[in-house]
Length: 191
Image (cartoon, rainbow, N blue to C red):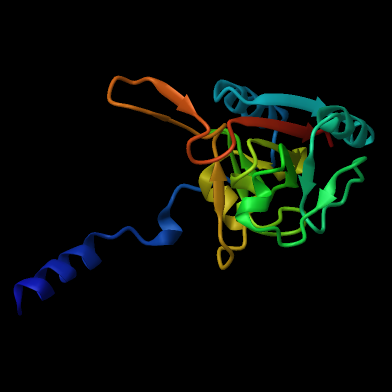
């Protein structure tokens, strides 16, 4: 047995089978939604808790006076918003705000996951404009990453969003908007 084969053999025997990973089987509790909102806000995102009837009015208020882009198959009507028509990266820079839905929200980390599904659009539309507004229904919030991964289409490109884009240099000076939107707003739609 070669050294490479010995190493691979050790890795195979040390790997934990996927079915043994921690999983919770409990339905989403209001505490999970509260935790999700708290964690999202900890990332300096703005959180709006709204009813289904308040979504359009809230989106219209957020977009007032801004050049807004929505995913081509977005379900809500927003006055003056433009549906994505495959704009180039250079054209996307001219939009101030993008509004999308999402696939799932993870309470323990405050992470939003997009999987290019209904109302989420192309990845570029959520990364180039400086302001991203994301809508998540209460029934899309799960407790853990494991639960979240069970709900997304893993064959599609996944985007994980944990607050506005930010990075820090060696001196820990926070700079926002380097790798994506500088501002994130999340509408949590009550059940």
